[in-house]
Image (cartoon, rainbow, N blue to C red; front, top):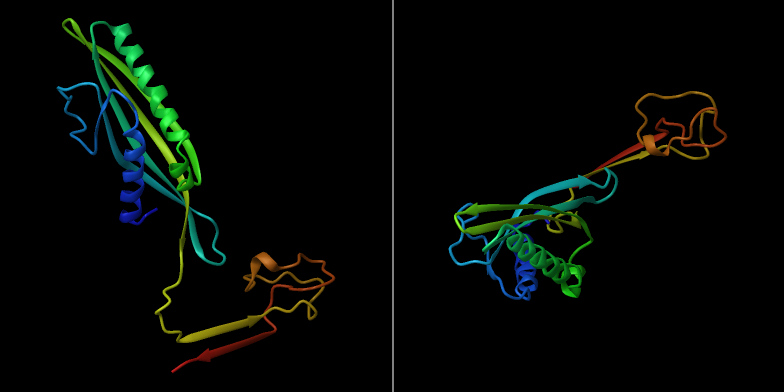
Length: 200
């Protein structure tokens, strides 16, 4: 999900889902650190992103986790009332996200949902804030450029039926395929043949 268009599409889908939460105004990205005067409000923005490689072999692919940040702000006449309002919105938000079929179809896994709640008093008015970090995981594969021109191929052969039964060779061409010594079959970690093909 490194493509900014993909992130924007997912955020737009998330916003459409959160638009179903009743009784709260939706903003994205909104002025994150400026308290809203017209409460309650729900702010949404895309935050951190992390890629974890799925291995060096084959297609270049990653498991990507994008963190979407949600902030709910409410006002009430008392601290308990503000906390109760936040808890109600949290339940509605969770139901909207985790029960959404279109959102789940775009998601490989919901890795985590971290919640931080705070209530402060400003005179007779109490302001409640709930920050939610939603970790969304999806598989990301980078395919080769189909328009790229093939210039050269290197072919190395470490054969199964031609092998040294006892020796351990350093820096084998295919380390994951080497049969450990003592062995009764190859590959043994040495190249029995090599061909280079260059295309004009």
